[in-house]
Image (spheres, rainbow, N blue to C red):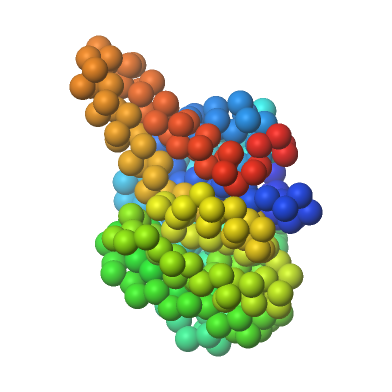
Amino acid sequence: MLVNMRNLLTDAKSGNYAVGSFSVANMEMVLGILKAAEELNSPVILQIAEVRLRQSPLEIIGPLMVAAAENAGIPAAVHFDHGKTMKKISQALDIGFTSVMFDGSHLPLDENIAQTKEVVAMACEYGAAVEGEIGCVGGSEDGSENIAANCTNPDDALLFESETGADAIAVAIGNAHGNYKSAPKLRFDILEQCSKLVSVPLVLHGGTGISDEDFIKCSKTGVKKINIATATFDSVENTVRRCYNENAINGYYDLQAAEVEGAYRNAKRHILIFGSDNKA
Ligand code: 13P
């Protein structure tokens, strides 16, 4: 059932767990993630970032994601991740995405606030939710840019919340996109201050490579949406490789099944850590 991310995160807040927001690049990943969520009776978010549209065009993958969520046996939101341009954000809303992120983290604070406000007004016409980002999560979603991490100033987060009316705020607490070169040391002191000051759910980007303990700690400290991308892509690739090595792939449909399996395993693992199982 296609739902609004706002409702999923409100329930996660009262239930003290986090919802996994899984990046997808094709139908096989969508099927694998929904299979895991359905099996575990968990709400879930399917997302795609604007930088990934080169490989997976929005006008093709967007309707696929929405249709898959509509047909899912659990509540599923469809989210546009790291929106950079008003054009693509409005296209995602037209397609039926139930939430969009505007990533103004590279802008000066006042400009980030002003542009996020524009997106909130646009999304409001569709009843869709908006995620903003304050501070700067390291790296870019597709690894093409070496963006330096810049931890969130909790007072800025409070100002951002009251000025923009965003439904969720992504924080930077030492997290980064892609595989970490060394184990991340998350700034729980900053997260605690943000969660005390800000009332909307917080979002953790760069989920790949964060320890189970840290995920759980985040989910109990205001983080209600956790983004996972690279871990899914790696799991799909590794599962396919293993199946080839074991001579388990004989023909295209075995390959397709291995891709679904890779996405399924990764989503299942994360849903159980985030504690959203049996919360659908
Ligand atoms: P990872 O690729 O590190 O899991 O990050 C995902 C993400 O934050 C997408 O916005």
